[in-house]
Length: 424
Image (cartoon, rainbow, N blue to C red; front, side):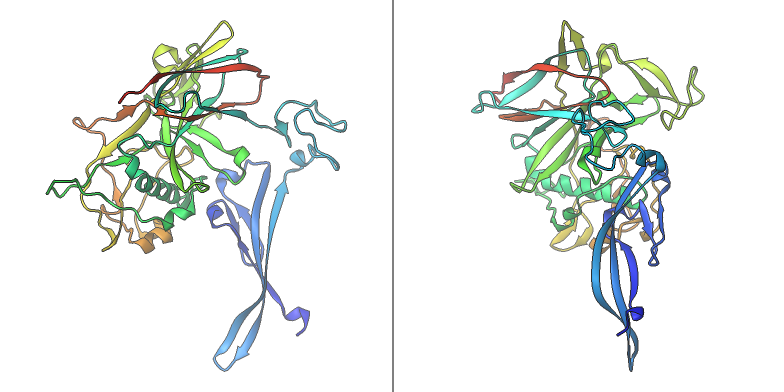
């Protein structure tokens, strides 16, 4: 066969990026509106080398080889920050560059940095974690992240169901244009409702859901992961913690990861408002009208006193509801409805409309999800009689991650955790 007889079709190799990059079979590439202001684009590509085989039934496509590669495109300005030899990492530059070296400033971009500790003091007892004392200079941390196993909570048996609902919701958001990733392995899970022991009620054991007030937004490169604080008119979610279920593949276990933004008492923030409110500011810094406001002691969670940051460890916020039998799926394989009323939309989504099955990911349609109230719950779980619940972070061991923006020099001398023994 002559080489000229071979043909090549190009595809995006990572289905999670289907709403960010678009590749035609001829190789033309375009990006979504949300990525147009980037300085660097990197995406995996699959190329199928094939030829046509003529048979009595017609032509058929015979794939001879499949090749995978990653394509990276940069703007000229970004390219100028690169060198043709060893690269600079922080202060480890090996050559002269056009710009002075700065901490965590890599490839023409200021990166955040973080450090992580594990609290293992007196690991034989359960602890109610109250506060952190951080001995450092006056550079305020951007955010705090607390990870525990969560085995002690009464909703521990519901964590797998919570994880399925959480990742399926992210899948829905990404499918409809949000720049957010999800764990596609959630489709391998089989959520199960639990009967209330000793009850003949049609309602099942309580389901639990974490409101996504403040959550991690995954990216392909973990160092680029960021944490978004959701806002809406006249409400500030930045002073509330947001928790999520994370899956540890090494131990096949589900953990609870709680995020909270660092809010100094004297710090200022951009509070979202209506464009008709007095003093409303509209500019390109945030995609909504805002006014400057001070956190204060009610919204703040940390204060700097004599070279110490005194930090309040937040509670876990969650909703619970006794649901009826799920109706998505079939006998022996039922799936929970996705609640769209208790969580703010991601910041890069202004509206979510589900009018036809084309607005639902195909993998969810295969499970039985459709355009109906059995598939998507639009009722609020927080009612007059059923309020949002809170519980202190408690466990024998806790992992603490403290994150900084990286734009100022930070030095930390010591970290102290204040806790009480839990006798519950």
